Amino acid sequence: MTDADQEKTGLGNYFIANYPPFSAWKPSYLADAFEATNRPPVPGTPLGLYLHIPFCRKRCKFCYFRVYTDKNARDVEAYTNALIKEVELCSRLPMIGDRKLDYVYFGGGTPSYLSAAQLRAMMERLKAIMPWDATREVAFECEPGTLQQHKLETLKELGVTRLSLGVENFKPEILQFNGRAHLEDEIHRAYGWARDLGFRQINIDLIAGMVGEDWDNWKDCVRKTIALAPDSVTIYQMELPFNTRFSKELQQVGEEAHPPATQVADWPTKRAWVKYAFDEFLANGYEISSAYTVVKGKANNPFIYRDALWHGADMFGTGVASFGHLNGVHVQNVDTWEAYIDKLDKGELPLGRAFPVSDKQKLIREMILQLKTGHLENEYFRRKFGKDISREFENGYKQLQDEGWLKVTPNGVDLTPAGLMQIDRHLPTFFEPEHASKRYT
Ligand SMILES: C[S@@+](CC[C@H](N)C(=O)[O-])C[C@H]1O[C@@H](n2cnc3c(N)ncnc32)[C@H](O)[C@@H]1O
Ligand code: SF4
Image (tube, rainbow, N blue to C red):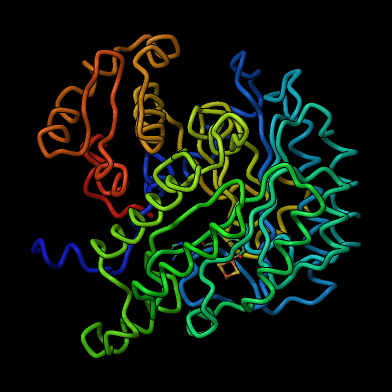
């Protein structure tokens, strides 16, 4: 591939969410996962719960998540019953020890697709199985057009602390062309209700590089987001994994056949958009909390789910196709509706594949995930792993320092601003040879 080709938004993943890569996870490792659930926990490891709600009003053309747009109320009930059954099975596992849930995350799909009554029934049953009394964060993803004031009141009352709105863009034509179901008015309405209800933290997701994006509109999106003044803003760079509608359309007609207005911007343009947005947010009182996120004051706006994952916490990943981490073993649930419901009907944990993570891989994983914050502390790794990362990863740091992406300091590592904007493409530098050249997912 030439350098110019590499800068185009081709098919495949950019974002690195875990290590070792998902392509290494196998059903043949499931025995390790079951064994891990029967061991007591490593002392001091927080425990979280992720719940996947796989319903959406419409499938966005860029989306790569496991979602369904054709399910009726009976299906939703069957699914939430299965989900609750799964949490019940998890709640009896010896790996819990005496831990209480530290964080809960409702992701999707679209958790806010459920009605207020469905959400209340589900959450009350969940809390009866695994209480939220020691839970520091309950995060909940919403698609703005699915929110009503009444639903938000219910979420607030049930204990949601971090509300995340999938805004993505404000321009009606762009939202529509990319297959989003919501309208601009719905963003403002939902945000206003959420703010009035006093949620502890409101996050807005934006995507740099939706099809049809240009500089003027992107500046407008940033301006409108700043005017709303959310506590947190997450900016993704549009990627085109293999299983999206856009990637299929592109594969069919060939990239060159598309007029520029229907192409995804190249990586340098998307990075320039993110840089512009970060600079504007910083000028308006925000701080950088990761390569993708700015917040209004880091101390007041922690993101406990993300930080727990990046520091090696345990997490039950419940729901169809969900990812979790159990006592040193990565796991993913079976990834079809039928297999998921069937496993729970039989009273079995619905695990589909796993990967037992070696001590060396745990160190690599935390190091690369924490690099996404822009900063590493030697001392943290010395205490937790008994390793000096400046020596362990000396060659990788030197290469990235020579290329201008980071700086090794006496206490750790600091990314340069340019390094932070494109950190995911550099993380494979630290992968073990057997994982370095594989497809990521
Ligand atoms: C599960 S969705 C959030 C909740 C809700 N489903 C919604 O879209 O409003 C998670 C986020 O992933 C991001 N996302 C999805 N597909 C993406 C892609 N191909 N490239 C970059 N970001 C993407 C979007 O910003 C989206 O808000
Ligand atoms: S981006 Fe959100 S709303 Fe769109 S299909 Fe994916 S999960 Fe559903």
